Every structure is written in structure tokens, then in C-alpha cells.
Length: 407
Length: 203
Image (tube, rainbow over all chains, first blue to last red):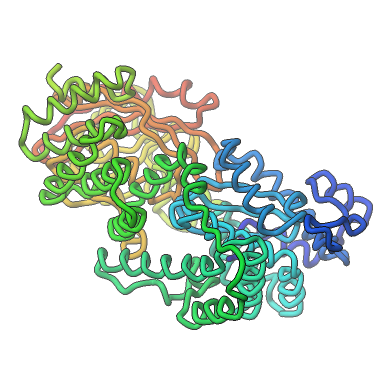
């Protein structure tokens, strides 16, 4: 996945031409950010000698860059967008540790609330996982595949190679100067077209991640499955918008992670070389349980992206093993939000399926009532809204819904 | 309107603020009734306001007291069926949701929320309450919202009031940072919103 989208280009540009701090200062920055110095080869979990992949910057430019990334990490820590939910953080950290081994404790994982599929690695060991990823990875093995891929970028020092390569290109400073005025996660994603790992590095990260998955006992096919799903979602988005699919376009995530047929074939070939013995864990139930409390917020973020085709694909994909009341509710919300007359009829059907289960989200009765009212079924609509109000007496929209319900 | 404000900040930062007439502000003097958002919506400000030249959309315009990032009133005047609230800048890759005349008040609040989420790329946006209200003498709604723009991190609160009149959506929104500015200027917005009236369309 992409490397580092939050390095501020302007500061990088200035680092190219200003003196860097003395080594002592750089070291104090690193320890402040929690980056540990390499320790004397601790023993791995399996008793084998363990070679830590933790890296310390070697020259003044690297140290300057590290400081900058540490500063970005400091900002990220205080961001409104970081999800602090202790249970989800603990779970993702555990999966990471199970997959990559003892280095996991030196790297920092941040779960960021943004509805897109991505994860990024910074050279100082800061890894971001975007919340949109949790709707798209289907089991623990797929999550582990993504985390392992990011870790390999870090372990194999891909960033350093990229950084030295960039430095050798004239004009890089001027380029970053132009982009330096733009801040923020999303805007800086535009930098990724320059700051992206090469195809060789991506291939190497894929290969490394397959090895790690096998070692941890996960199904190594998980890595290629993630990309198949993302490709299919891009097709679904495009079909609903009546535009060409962006799956093979440059720009955005696909520029840095071309989910090409070639790449998937390579991943499958790698897996084919793996001995067939040993466990092939997916841990789907554990994954769903860990996601449970936050799933509603993530699907809500997705529905409000106004991406009908992509969202319908995702919901259908999540329903591979049967429609739950949560999924029917989500489908009702999606159709109601598009709001064409035929959508209202469909939404009513989905909400009815959801509310057949008394454990459905209480908002399903709200959606049912609103859809019925918009379809002209006044009495039925008001009855559904009254159920919503009765079940959620402290609803934030109580006053408006009560009026619509004729209470 | 959040997107317009972000663009203004970026342009100002790179020194293009004076480059064109679009970002110029025009004084909207107190006591003078005026049509807003190229629509039939009329407003009578009780104090002097500044109208920002750049419009968030064909039927929208923004006013401010101290600058859009500190207090931002945006008028949406007569949004027609199957149109967006503001400019659909990334129509192909990130299209905005469209208003439908069949929408109920909660649907309109969700349309607004979704439009913001898409246009400024945030997932931190919520409608915090919604209730019936009178708007320009017509039955309408009022809702409160809050959001954070990604990469900016300033927590903002907002309030909106509007109604569907003659099949078109009229909406006035106010937003400002939670720290100091919302409470300091929300009364000025409420004054403006209370002065709303629907007149004969000015062409």
C-alpha cells in the first residue's frame, strides 16, 4: 500500500536545502516519538534468533526527514480522526503482532476515521489504517495481509531507497514546493503519485507479506482476495455512475497499488509455492466480533459517500453468507438515500426484512416510516415512526419525527 | 460553506487572493432588504455583513462577519428537483447527492450531511438535532450539525433552517468554530434567518 501520505511537501523541500539538526537532537526526537533504538537481537517467539528490522536514520537528510515524520505523527496523535476505541485498537495490534512478530511493539498503529480503503507506512514506523478498510477486508487473514504488506515496506527500508532516489532527481524540491501549501490527509494523497513505491517494491512487499501470512498460520490467499474485491468494487461504482471503471486508471490508490491481473497472478503464484501443509486460518468470526460495535458507524460513513454502486456491491459482498438485519437495514438506508421513486419501494422491502427481526437496529423503523411516507403510505409510515419513537425515546430527531408521525 | 472556505484559504495562502474579483467581498448594509442566492429569497440584515464574491453554487451564496473560517452563513435559494446544493466539482469521481422534491425534513438534513461529507472528504459530520420550525412564514425545519474538515482539525458547529416552498428548497446555514465563534455570532445568524422572506423572483 502507499507509503506516507502525510509528509508535508513544503517541509521536505526545505529539508532538501537546509541544514539538519545534530545527531543528538535527532535521537531525542526519536525517543520522544516512541521509536526505540535497535536492541541486541532478542529471541523470537519460536526461540530462533530474531533480527530486529528497526532502523535508525543514517545521514543528516534522513534524520531531518525522521524529525518531520515524527512531527506529523505528533499531529496525528491529536487528530479528531484517530479512532481511540480500546477494543478495536487492541485487536488490530494483536493481529499485527501475530503476523509480524516482536517488531510490532516498536511500530505504532493508528486507525483513522475515513471511509476509503487504504493503509500507509511512514519511515519512522507509523502505520495508518483507514476505517474504510474494515468494511473491505473480510476476515482476519485479509487484515493481516494488509498489515504484513505495510510492515514489509518498513522492514525492507523501501522508503529510504525511494528517498535517496528522489534526492538524486533534480527538480524534486521545486515540485514539492508547489504542493507544500496543501495540508491534510486527503489533499496530500495527491503526492502519492510521486511518493509511491516502485512496482518492484510493491512486488517485494507482496512476496514478504505472503511469507509472513504463512508463518503466522493465515491463509496466504487472503492477499490476492483483497485486491480482487477492490477491483470488483471499482467496477460496481463505475457501472452505477455510467462511467469507465477506475480500476486500471492512474491516480488515487490505484496509482500506487495497481491491482492488475499481473499482480494478482504473481500473488497466486507465490502462494502456489507455499507448502500446502499447516493451518490456513481466516478467523472470520473473531474479525466480525472485533469490528462489531463500530460496524454501524463505518457502514454509515460508506452510505453517505453517495457511491450507490460501490456501496451496494460492498453490502452484497458482506451478505455472502446470508442477509442479517444489519445488512438489510444498511441496504434500506442506501436505497432511501438515493431516493428515486423505485428506490423507495425497494427500501421499504429491505426495512421490512430488517424489522422482521426484533433485534434490528432501531433506526430501521425510522427508515421504514420515512420511506413509507415518501411512497404515500401515510398511516403505515406513521405507525413505523411511532415504533421508532417508542424504542428510542431520547432520539436526537425526536421533535421532527414526532411531527411526521402525527404524535 | 466548508468547501468554499477551504479553497479560499488555499488561494489566499499562495497569494492569489487579490488576483480576481471572485473572492472580493461586498458590503451588505444593515437595514436594506436584498435578494440572495440569485433567488426569490430576501434577507434584511440587522448589522453590516460581507457577501463573498465566489459562490458555492449556482443558487448559493455566502456571507460572513469576520471571514468564512470564523463565521459562515450560506444561503441556498430555490434548489430545484434533481440538482445539487452546491457545485458538483468532481461530478465523475465524487458526485454530490441531489435534492428531490419528495424529500422530508430528515432527508434534507441527510442530503446536506452527505453533500458535506463528499465535498470536504470527512467522516466526522453529524446532524445533532432536528425539529419543525417556521421559515419565511412557511412550515419548515431547523437542524443543528457539527463537523471537522480532514486535515484542518478545527471543530465546527452549525445550525440550519429552511423549507421546501413551491417544490424548491430554501435553506440558510451558519457554521463557526466551536471555540468562541459559534456562540459569539450565532445570534446574528438567527436574526438573518428570521428576516427571511420569499419575494418575486429577481431576474
